Length: 441
Image (cartoon, rainbow, N blue to C red):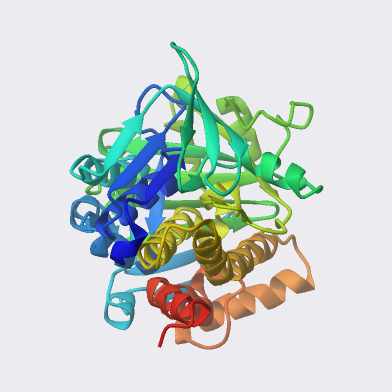
């Protein structure tokens, strides 16, 4: 922290994973005035399971909230790839090495536990103020960004800040404003896929010994078939079994681009996975009709920049990804860690210094995030192969994983990809890049 930086004021738009992580990281790095604006009336956390990779856990540990999150999570010891139709194991990877190799285990948990853990930690920080029911619209980008806050009930008012971080998700309102300023746009890319997210309780599974065995195991399982797969694992102290599917999108084809979710049909879901093994069938039949929601999986083309003046995009606002590498939230938290480093090292509050610090953030994060987006897409393509020579070769590669030989078609299980994701201390990278950019020895 440099005293010449003065009372830096950071405004964060959005209180999702990226916004919460940014607020907490900035406060822990000595930023004393942080305002978080959220359109929702509260942070009533919902959602299903989430993977908590070491690159995420390492940052959250530094921020002081990892212990409470990990307490309810399950440490992954094994990842298993199985043939959809007969439950036959195609490949298997031992994850127990991760804790020793990378200093933090690979875990799986509940999204509400992750978000709630960060939010509770934020509430302990005097520097952070939350403003709910608040919609934001950028008016100027530099030298001090200005934006209008429109409360759901109340009179609009203008806010000036030294830095604005737009963590307002894949439907970001700030992203198109930045791109319009640059005379470009980022095309929304339809993946052609949708997902069901399902949580079964221990009580629902209690009468089926095979299901209970899954619930008690420290493992992640993918059942893979042509154009579809299911990933599942135990969460919430093994009281919930989280199931997430990927299948061809048939319900959103004619929907407006703003629509990302719809009420799911249990009949359609069962039809979609009717050739999966009996174990999967029994689990899907347990899903209550009224509890099923379907998500459209979308990304957008890479942005030319994440930064405009003293405003920067964060998380899904700038790098939404398909879920197949289990890195969406982790990458938003990496954004937060890097932003905390570069903004806390500022020599002063000048707009030039702030813009250069945000450019360091972009240089450290943009290429890495976009590489992982590409790897997630490649994994999906490999997982969804139909019968033929390509599938036969893929399955040989999966079989070789049992003897720790060769690359994995599922990049989530690939040792070299894991090293690239888990083995980098992104905050230390940011520190070194900042020193270089600002000519500090």
